[in-house]
Length: 541
Ligand code: NM2
Image 1: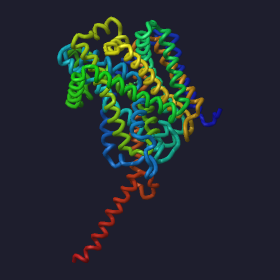
Image 2 (image 1 turned 30 degrees about the vertical axis):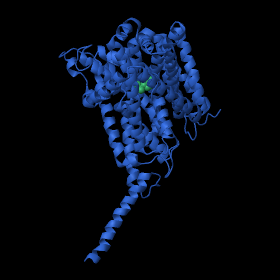
Image 3 (image 1 turned 120 degrees about the vertical axis):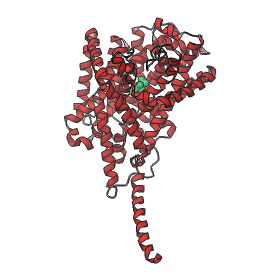
Image 4 (image 1 turned 180 degrees about the vertical axis):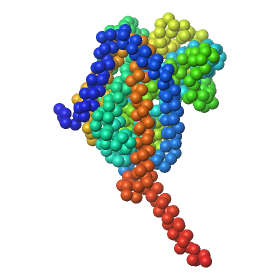
């Protein structure tokens, strides 16, 4: 077992923090819940606006980067082809960044908005229906994907352009923080990121498990109790541990491809055998609502509600802020992962690819699955809202799928897909966690290390599951990720600083990027034409 490669302070730091938070929550569940919930209220009430600003600014920043000269920089050597073709790249990106939660929320999110819409709209009204069809897409749309993409910029830049074989968040802020990242500050940054990811992944696993349990219950009749959920969690851990163990090019890639094909099958089936026209029209319509209200949604804080001007719904805290926080805790991980698979692409391709393919994928899920549920509700074929009141969200989700033709088969596909979605997020998470606790990663992180983090990932969710309650889960990721707002800012700054310096000094700089070479040529061309003009002058005279 090679242990010299391991960055022990980060490894131990992350483990201690993980156990330090998880064990008390298991030992004192009630008190733990209370503390976590108070921390949440404090954070979202006082700092919610920070999350909103962060989301919006990151979006604007990435659009800028994509179309700036920095966007033309190539991640890799000149003439190098992308390591993965675009289909596999998009599949891996989506499979890593999106887990089983998309199956959960795409099917049911509309029901929450229908009953609790924003903007002071009457619950259950015609207007609420419109928002219900569009808001999910917003929370899984361009701003969300921009949050995912930001960390990929500096990380990919240092890995493939400056060729530093370190996949760490701390390494990516070196241009701003200097060599202090080699000391405790660097460890703190990496540990914070790892902790955030463990919290975010906890939310995913704790949402996904009851839904998978309900799927199995619907297929076999086995009661969806804590025992079944524990077995499911352990089984999923086993699957993703094997996938992560077998590495990026085998396990992770194969599982991602299966994931994509199965998703396409499920979506196509619902679209074709469900209410095709309603789904097409409502999805298209929702895109219009989204485009029309993008800024309004991106900035909605309900400030007047707090002053009693109209009924306070806490919509921003419950939804947009919670979502941005959840995307945020996953962001460095997805950034590391996107960076790792983007060799041979330009920054622009990476940024636009993530934002466009990511959003498109989510729009398809929400448009097809969500509007199928909404259709059942509005036509009275299945009263999902009443069913949810009586049986909870996971059972309602499975029941909505049960309304499809070939119901049993489709629930089977849905359940298997949920397991694979979960596994593909967790195999890449453990892969990345392992990379972060290594001093360098030339090829792949060590196998035992990958395996170790695969099992560690399961600990927090298990604890959260015994704690119960969605609120606590949402909270865990918000609280865990707060310091990442600052780190995101440092990451953006760091990328701009490093890439601008390299572009400026590109004459001395090894031209490993398309742009820097082209940019140089352009400068030369300009010089030449000025010279030519000079030379031409006497002739003209
Ligand atoms: N996000 C995309 O469970 C999952 O789908 C993982 C969740 C951040 C809302 C990511």
